[in-house]
Image 1: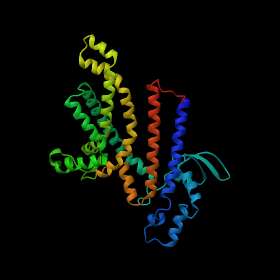
Image 2: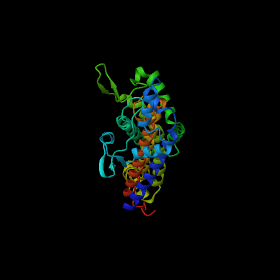
Image 3: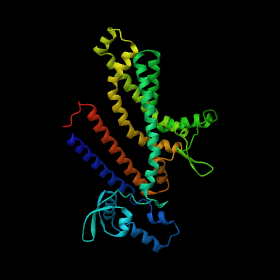
Length: 351
């Protein structure tokens, strides 16, 4: 088990290192960071000072080493009060004026707001997590219910209608569903539904206070959850049909057990293993899909911050968001692999 976890963790670290390399070389050289930070009217001396502070006066290879040193949790820095305040590190040991430190990855500061990128992303992350979890809850409940119903009504008009609906749900991207839902239920029918076609989880009222607006979560969660609903429904239906054909189900029917008891107590319990695996695997995907949904609904989560950073050429925020999202993917997939291995003894930790 420990060997399995260590191997998965190593794969995750290698993925993140690859993402760091790609992100640096993709964004490096785009725009003039000093001009983006200071504005177009800055004088030459000030621009040179900013370039020196950011390390932009050094060769690209040296800049990459500096960036890698910033984002790694264990890194080497000059032991100065400025660096201690900048990185908030825990010194491990030092030599020759430098110190090996343990710290949170430093994603630098925004060109536009001058705020730490980490703080900006962490403040936006909860709204994205709430959106993704709400969409996953909606998709799981509706998908399982429809899948069970379609399985017990196999080859009827209801089964065929559900299958057609699932194909339509899978075939359309989330951002298209978001546009349609916002237009119909938020704009055309907004006076009747009471829903807004845009707005975040929190809004500022007339008194300047943040107010929770759960209704602004409904349409984005529906748009984000439509595709996983379709997949979970089809998977539940297929798994239920397989279980309902087993000998022990026929034995239970021969004993005179009620249909609902057979379906929900005996069949559904055994049919849910692949469904649970699919649900856990979809969570990371929903975090990524939320990027486009947040822009459509003006929902101020992680995706909203990232797209705005790209529009404003705020590259530290965009780079930090990519690394942050990649880290979430690695962590979630690692947890899913571990949980699945614990729940399913058929998983071999030797391969």
